[in-house]
Each structure stands twice: as structure tokens, then as C-alpha cells.
Image (cartoon, rainbow, N blue to C red; front, side, top):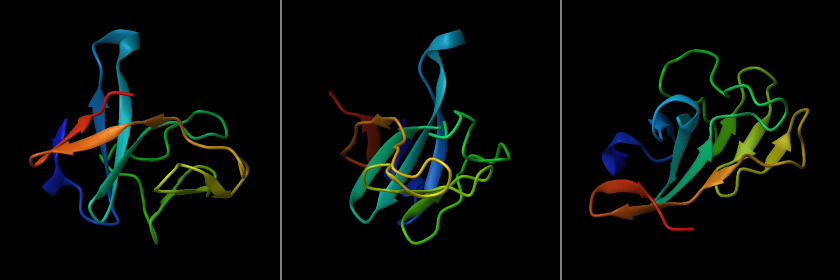
Length: 108
């Protein structure tokens, strides 16, 4: 999927994932120290991408993902919405693992 070095601690990276057509989606990869977490790039509020621009990253602050559309804030560790119109809901998680120097999708 991507190299661990491609995602700085406290930051995110958006990567395309899956086959083609309807099977393809954007995956947000976030890093908190040695831990990596993955989420479908769709706000829990109304399923729009968290990033306003197609810039391969979602804005982050203090280990939180920020939705550019609704100002919702999601924890890195579980995608839980702490603030915003979808407070109490969560992003859709995709389990990730680090294998060598690569971030890969882990078996659920």
C-alpha cells in the first residue's frame, strides 16, 4: 500500500485502495508513533471525503483527523468523532499492520 516512511508521526496519507470501479475507495492512513490506523475516507456525517482538496492527505492536529467540510475531529486510534455534527459516531476502520518497512492491510 505505502511505505511507513511515507506517513510521518502525527500525520496522514490518503491512498487509493481496491480494484477498479465501485470496488475502489480512498483509504486514510494515520500514524501515531509506531502504530498505524486506516479508515475509509468518508466523513461519518454524510460520507464526503474528509479532505477538501485532492492533496493525498487529511489535515491533522494533536493526533486527530479533521474534516474540512464539517470541522469534525476524529481520534487517530479508533476514528471516534470527538467534536462536530457526527459526535459519537466513528469512521469506518480498515485494519492495518506494518510488515518490514511497508504498511499493509491486515487480516480482520
